[in-house]
Length: 375
Image (cartoon, rainbow, N blue to C red; front, side):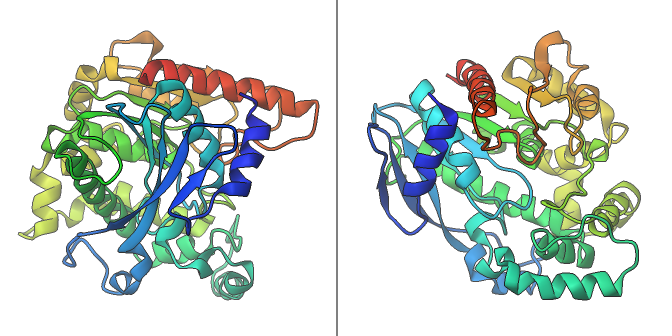
């Protein structure tokens, strides 16, 4: 498969608005499925956030493999501050084609089409960017693309956890429905695997460690450009969040978060006693709940594989190795370096010939490896 050509073809035919999308010269189809989030409006949610209706009622794409009777499902989890599926369409297409799996592109809370359209509108966001830059000194990497997330996390860094909690709750609802035979497209199955990129890998590791309702017993997780604990990430980027927001979130979870876990409340109880809550805390820093984290990851060592990029500055390879390299499996983390200009946010850029050939080659190498692992 030629990545660059397929990327452009899928970009031209995809729409969140169409129920069924046919792909030219392919037996794979895309169905946009409606979803309603049942996350409770309590301590886990922000009152202002509950007014954003896009986050509660939305659609997600499912790539239907050529064999519609397949019992295999891959959940594909995206990166932080994504506002479009375009980058991921060819990823999902390749996985569906080469693993014969249903591939679900599920949006993280307040991302992609779970956020207001204005959040990705340069004209709407540039005003807020100017106000933010004039209100705070020494902000680095500020842009219209990251202003919405930057403002939200600076105002309430607990939104980082709350977004993950809601997404996890939604994924449990989605996959338990498939397990029980209630999905409108995907046949009844418990054969769930995950392809996770960037912050999606952070979420996926927590879900796998927590294994809610035993949905992920035996599931495999292929990680691309991710896998480290939070403290080894550098999320300041014009495409993710500005330096002020990242510093606020970093300080909160590294130095303040554990101090808030006192008294009795649903939030505190969840974080102190549930398997997923403890998994989240253990993935903040290498020294936090270290034995808990390493014991679980060691049991999962044959179910996880990671490909990291040498020049990735957002989630550096060193941090991934520090997190996953001690689970008694030497080849759990591969470090690759693509021979063309790339970044964490854009590992497979659309380039002109002859560099496009190199992008095509390395895309094929990453996703063939993923397909072999997840098939």
